[in-house]
Image 1 (cartoon, rainbow, N blue to C red):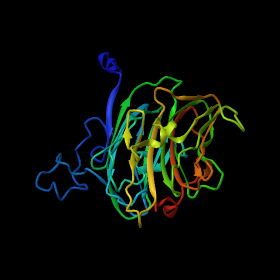
Image 2 (spheres, rainbow, N blue to C red; image 1 turned 180 degrees about the horizontal axis):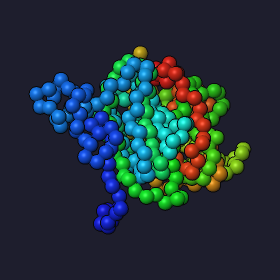
Image 3 (cartoon, rainbow, N blue to C red; image 1 turned 30 degrees about the horizontal axis):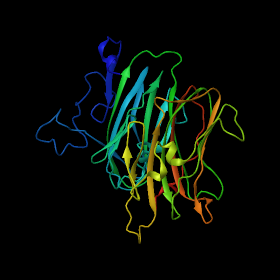
Image 4 (cartoon, helix red, strand yellow; image 1 turned 90 degrees about the vertical axis):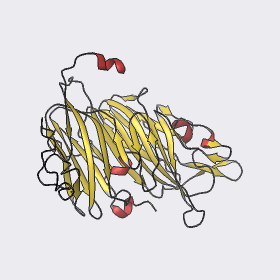
Length: 350
């Protein structure tokens, strides 16, 4: 990767933030009035006058609306919304009316319930102290992009920076997608669907899961399955267990305890703490990036995972857990229609 830095490029860098809402050349730090006018009143223009935007209660704001060709290279965000999943992130490419990214902001950055901070260090996503949310997936666009934020709760502030490149794209460039799902509880003996009804040619690049366990005992015997290009009853790719898919082994158990871990491509970066009384249910946050090993599809893709524990007699127990996920992929299709997001009550983690 470092060799990429040693050759000339026909690329222009720009950044969209509250201090430069259009990404215009020389357009940063020009605000006369803004969200921090009071703090900067003695210093004036150029002294952090508008570092954040206010998101109205039960309203929407546009974070960026750019026309041109290029790619988003990095997104950094943080907010003051302490209610998990209060903010919904939507990203639209090339004038589409349906979003290609639609997720609760926290889940997109692999931190469904981020009231209790955990460090996440990986190639695609980083969550840094005290709630710095970072995405490094490249997001190309031929005509432009728009990023919106919907607020399902009370007023909050959003700080953000969207780092971009203006450049010519190859005609075979694919679009980035991210889709959120949640089922609570999972119906008995039904697999959890991570992704379905996706058409086009592309490759699957990542999974984030927020898994709430509602039974005693180990919960991750289930197999992940990738149904590719017309697979029906049986998948082309079938895993051997939940912890195996997330690149761990044997229940993530070290000396009788679950063990958090972060690596560039996979991890279980958060295990929520409980008091064994009122907070008795445990939640786990897991990620798996298919960056060196994308899963390619020619026509369509479906992804499921089983929820399996153990019952008496050394028999599998189908679980009815609270499971959420975000699937990340690239494809040449902008017309996939995503499932409707739950309302605030349906998103709440309890």
